[in-house]
Image (cartoon, rainbow, N blue to C red; front, side, top):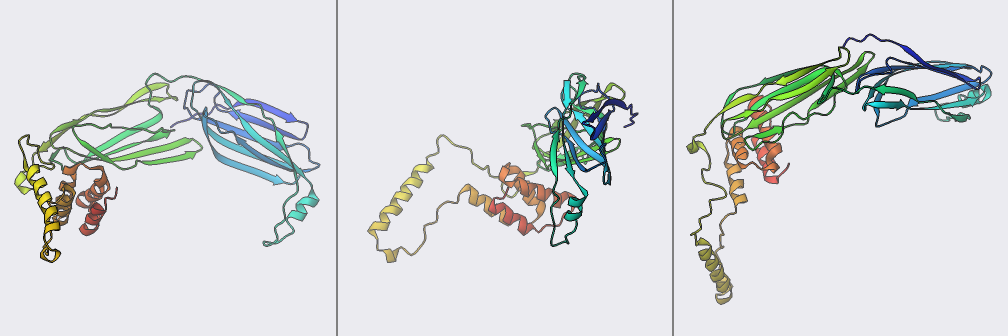
Length: 375
């Protein structure tokens, strides 16, 4: 971002002839979320005593700030501080930048006493602290164009690994947004019944420097579906305060062709859970079997009941058996994608990294993760 700084002398004040301070602000009428540069200079005017300063902006919901530089001339009796801040006003209208400041007084004898101890005998500096009331700095913040998502100078890039895949075999989309500005939290895609969207926490970076803030955010998505679908267009409306122009950042809609899987290649082609048959009376036979076993336990001697009664396996047990019998990472991945169960999400992401990115993780370890139900 190119920035031509226009320094405005905002305020110079001398208090009780002992200290003076002045502010220099780059722009008193910024746009909302436009970067501002604030320079603050504090100087000791009463040279008969030893002074210390503490200074900072107050935290506020009306603005964000970051200290990017500090210089100190700490000569006794001639203390000078220089601060430099980045400020981002977060709301339009009048915004007051508020400050907190403390000036402290001591003398040469007390300073000499405090530094006379060694590392194991630290002595505190005796001083007198006085809170200084600093008049707020008023900004008149201009509103942004309607429906603006980003403020600054950005570019958006993306890459899709393939546009054709098999059912439940995911495609991978990487998106990178980077530039100069104070990036807010963003969500690019919402849930959709036509496909399953898996993602990790986006990688966000901010670097505050003398020209502003360099920001970037990177998303990694895995998208799977059983039928062909279209990933919707992403449109971000951006505004550059330096050029005073709006611009669009766009990811076009992506048509994904999904080829159907030959069911004979699947480990289990049986519907799970099975389709309910209204005329299915098998439950009655099962109930009678349970009753007969219960009666036999009372009528027959215990030493005659040497064989175990094997009940029908539950759906969860069948799935566990299917997981254990998979022989490759890809087989296990396809099996878990079909289940569409949140408790296997971590295992799915890990398997995708193994199958498509070459990550080294043993299949047995991933199976164990599935059986323990880790999320």
